[in-house]
Image (cartoon, rainbow, N blue to C red; front, top):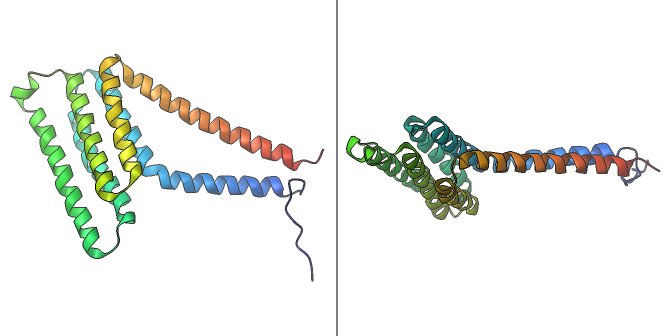
Length: 198
């Protein structure tokens, strides 16, 4: 019988195996977190578009509602069991997001539209999206949806207080992505150095 050599930091294949394991974990994390990242990025794009263009980007926000509904249904689907609960989830989400679309339409009526500027309408749309995502998280008992809703809701006052804050949020998001990449790169280099015998 042949013995399997133990994998130790000084083993020649350690770095490759550790690198493969790290990539697998990163892929699993990205797939699990992708719906939430998608909601945050799409919302930040809408805010930036509204802030920079000087228009409320109504069509974008109206398109954001079905996208958010689809993400909330997909996330909630994993957390409920049974056909009846799945049907209840779909019906609840469709009704909730239809109410969001009606609220957006009411804000765009000419009488209401005349009272508000483009930035305030964009912030109101973001508030509606954030509230609906948070409520979906409560209904589906998914803390990550609640966290996304709170993040987006917390962004509203910041955007109202700081001119061009969308750029700041985008810079923060890019900074967090850069930090994550730097950590990944440094961890990878560290594991490679540990696997080379001194």
